[in-house]
Amino acid sequence: MMIAWTAPYHQCEADSLDVNQWSILAERAFSHEKIQTIISFLPENCKIYGFDIGDFSNDGRSDVVLSVKASGYPSNTLQVFMLLNDGRSFLPVYRQFTRYFSLPIEIGFTIDQGVCYVTHKIADNHWRIDGWQVRRNCLQLVNSWETRLLNLKNNLFTLGYEYEDYFLQLREREAYFHRLGRKTYFENSYAVLPVYNKDRTLNPAVPREIVVDSAASICQGLSNWYGPDDLSYAIHAVYDSAFLTISISIQDDILVSIGEKDSVDRMELWFDVSGRRKLLFSPNGYAIRKKTDKGIFILGFTVDSSKSPYFFAEGKKLTQDQKEALTKARLRQWHDAMGRAHADLRIPMELFSAGKKKGKSGFGFVAAYHDVDQPDKPFRQTTLATSSNFESGNPSTFGKILFLEQGEWFGEFRDVLIHRLLNRLARIGVIVSGGSRP
Image (tube, rainbow, N blue to C red; front, side, top):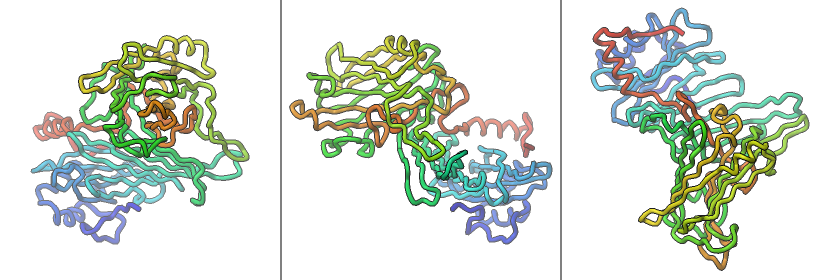
């Protein structure tokens, strides 16, 4: 469990410290002058309720995270500051007002192995831990974990729910379990494909490509896989008002392209645009959604060196507009000098009904490559997928695709260079700095 007060920087029996008391403790790590630069960003006459000191920028210098409360703040509200050690002074790269449930200590901090973890009790039986790190001049939310109880209306039992986001790896894990931990009803780990507008300029620190190159992604034929040079691939995507374009690069050491569709090397992209949950609840229990039902469609193609690879598009219970849009999907495939296969799929946005308006909640999505290295033994296939327990046509095993608009991200990003510029402008009096009110 994360805690607010972390040794060896302080030993205090009170629930808060005034700025002078905190300064005495902080002088064990920093000079008086550097501490004053921290204080200059805090509200007047504030109390400090939690802090930790450590390196979350991975530059060998100790940074600071702390929470404060000042007069005029709403009840059950603290302001959290993350301050980057910028050499001669500190730079505030995060200021956020956060509500605690009952006690200020329910917002706590630990800096460990280059990551600043913020623990937050949101409600009874509902906790969240966020991990922040400075990478490539950007403060990034690198991982997040949340757990809570689901008290389902008119239901005879209570489920526990847990999810984790790994924003750098573009992966997510979710699980439903017995509230006492006696049984896991459903669990899946999968990739999340973030899709940004093709005209949007992104910070280089923003991950946008899924790389599938590990044994953890093999759903079938693990004994036939000999590493990334045998089989691996990468996926990224962009969208505009008319089309979603998915780009794929594939490393496959032996291409098998002669034979029936199910016995050759091929890539499948499954989509679920129904908006339905993976678990369907009823007053007497729950059911895992396993059938290829309404709103599911597949785009696939064989991977070979010919100019006309086999391309297929099939849908299940789509609207008439979606059926027509599916016929307009197009594939372009080529090979580079190193023998890697590349493909661009252009998919009409009408297939996604609400399209990019779906935003951060996303649609179901999974990519699966079926590798046949021995044509005379097509049953000895290796399937490498973006979802760890992928099953063809089973929507409960899909991952996610997110259409993100301007200002939206998978994760959170705060540009350190902009904060540094604002801090310098404040020093010379161009803008006003200091604590603020919610």
